[in-house]
Each structure stands twice: as structure tokens, then as C-alpha cells.
Image 1: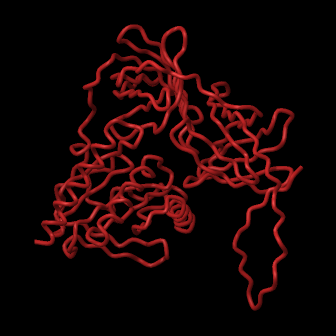
Image 2 (image 1 turned 180 degrees about the vertical axis):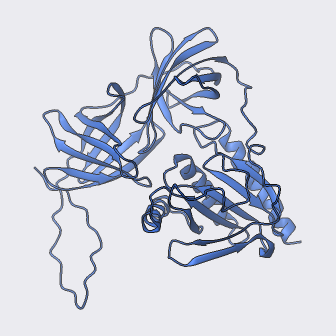
Image 3 (image 1 turned 60 degrees about the vertical axis):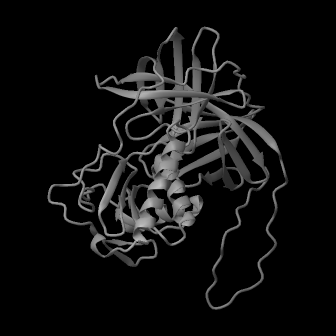
Length: 398
């Protein structure tokens, strides 16, 4: 069995000495069909490529991410951004092991890497742009959503948008009987969608995560919308200003008072466990860099890890892997903490949520949730928000 090595930083007290040359793994260049088993039976598949000590996971044709491996007989690795890990052992067909989340108890799913080329059947016909669907959970709860479809590189792509976010990138193919299959795995979200269509009608099933499930039905409706994200979250009646004193990732307390700010500011409610927060974080960092000191952005992370130290480590990983440059703070780190005490909102309805302030500290808007790059709303949101910030900066400069 070849050795797989991660080279890390080694600190030595008192003195240092020359380190031996690390053993470099022989290039393998092997392709695999990756599979995660949900609900004891449902299979989500994807392309995986092994090169030296790095596994590259492909989430359809829309994104990829690397997992560096270490170990000998048992290989281990951590996914970027999220608290998700894998372990693998060699098998006759390739590798088998487990995908598991380190921030959740008993969250393990079988993972298989089977030697071979993962291919997605081509789709040439343009699908309907959008279905307005209703999600029916076994509890009797029925909720609206939008199932959006498109083509990328002759491949069927899609997403499920709810009032607070989306399922991120899903990729699939049409089936002969009428309908389609969509799958997605981004290191955190795990989705399998099976849909049947008849005319403008659709019905199907969605399996998500370890045990999540709902069935749905709906019709083609390109103009359907959900709740207005700028009307979903409200300030409390006793609101006068926004003030907080929170630990930064360096351990120092950061003080904020909206009455003393002098530039437009965005307060982003986020979490290291939240894929939609990852997508919003990239956009906010783009604005932060573009406006080059003319605006401020703060990421307020609501964590579940139980201790400040663990929460800080999780957010530091997110910051490092996303490459963001705006300050991030720990808003809460334990589920027992009151998550509605930090900001003067009636309640936090979604992660992410962003609060935009002008240079005088007035709340300009509150945007609940985030529609990421897999949705048709994304480009419009990015452009409109940029224009809003430009207007606020111009106003601040008089």
C-alpha cells in the first residue's frame, strides 16, 4: 500500500534541525465513480479523481474541490470549509469507507470509490426553466419551492430554491420514461432528486443528507416567486441602534456601534456549517475587495460546537478555505446561547441573513437567505447589491 502524506507546519521549541526529505507519493492518476449511500439505500454518485495524495471531487460539471489524504492502510482526509471528513481503505474495486461530519453525532454514511469513468448522459433539449412545486413532508408539513433547470455543456443542471436558500449545484440527466434524475454532493449538502413529468406537471421525491426526505408535485411556472427576502426579517419594536462586542478569530474583542460608523456596512449572519453562507461569503468578499476600504463587512458566525475554541477553529477553517478577507466574529458557539440576543431582529429566520447599513448607521435593508450561483436570481442580486453599495458610498462621500 502506498503511503499518502500531508506536509504540515512543524514548530520546535528551543532549537531546530534539518527535517528529512518527505516521501512523495507516486502519481496514480486514477478515476473513480464515487458513491454515498443515503437512507440505507439511496445512492448519490459523482466523479472523483486521485492524483498523488489528493482526491478531487466533482460536483457535476459546475464545481470541484480537493481533499488531501494522509495515512497508510487507512486513508483520511478533511473537506474544505466544512466540518466533514472521510476515511477509506483499499478494496477489490477501489476504496470503501465512510463520509462523516465531525460537528454532528452519529452522522456517518458509507462512501465507495469504484474504479472507472463517471459519465453523465448528454441532454440536448432545453428543459422548462422552472417548476413551482410543493414539498410534502411525512409530518404533514407542506412548503413551496422552485425547481429550476438549465443546460451546461449539454448536461442537465438544476437546483431547488426555497424561501431561505437553495440546494446549490445539482446535475443529472433525463430518463426514458419522462422525467429526470438530479444529484449533488458538495462536501456538506447531499441531494438525490427523482422526478417524473407529464405535460406541464411534475411529481417526484427528494432525499437529502443522512435521512431527509420529502415528495413533491408542481407545474411549469417560469414566473413563480417565493417570499420577498427583503420583507421576511424585521427589526424589533424597541430597536434604536445596533451594538455588539464579540470575540474575533484572533481572540481580541471587536466592538461595534452603528451610531459611530462612517461608511456603509454589511453585517452578515453566517455559520461555518452553512453552504449557502459560503456562497454569500464569496460575494461579500468580492464587494469588500472591490470597494477597497469604502465599505465595511463583518461576518457574525453562529456556531454549534459547544466551546469558543472549537467555534473559532471552525470559522478559521472557513475563512482560510474560502480566502475571505473581511473580519469574522463568533456571535454564539453553543446551542444553549440565545441566538436572537446579538442583533435587534425579531428572530433570525435564516442563515445567511445580511443587514445593510448606510454611513450614518441607518438600516437600509435586511436580506433573508441567499440564492447562490446555481439559481436564476443570483446574477441579478449580485448586480443590484453592487449598485446599492455604489449609491451608499457616493452618499457617504457627499
